[in-house]
Length: 262
Image (cartoon, rainbow, N blue to C red):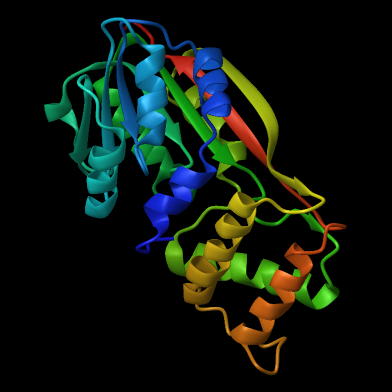
């Protein structure tokens, strides 16, 4: 999904109430030092910062320099720091945290997701909380697709798994990650995400249009179902998406756990 518009896409689709409810469910509290790993536009870091006041601090980490700059420009406050880092690498220089937040990040690291969670656990204090949030059957649940469009979608996802290390099913794995790492008091919540019916909103249309224009176009899939290739596929998908009869959703799975004192 890397593009010039990615920070804007993430910004537009981030809902304050949803983020706040997820973080409160996970156990965020005032005074905590929070790591927002894969902070995207920085909007989520601001919401987390508001929840840990008074005296709390947030460190946002992202791998993309343009998103760091976007976050600093749009969501900087004293008590929020944005740092350019790769969460696959050692993070010891960041210090220790009371709460680690990883939302919609692990789906981009299919072969490395467990090792990432193991790595970031090193900067969580004993007794601290980690919250992992991601999607299951990502981009695959649509009613109203033609047989051709449905077949193409599954082919695209397979191509993204192979060529981009994308994981459309990472949500179902989150519990096992924390279980295998020995976390305690693990809890799981599931809710609908991308729940779209009737007339699509401007935000939903922009979000899905970018998914198709960026990730799908770069997937390496040959679009053999369509004589005119990608362009014909794009036209059919946008017709489908603009139809108010269409029904789309993705399960979002939240998993939280406490790091054992030992």
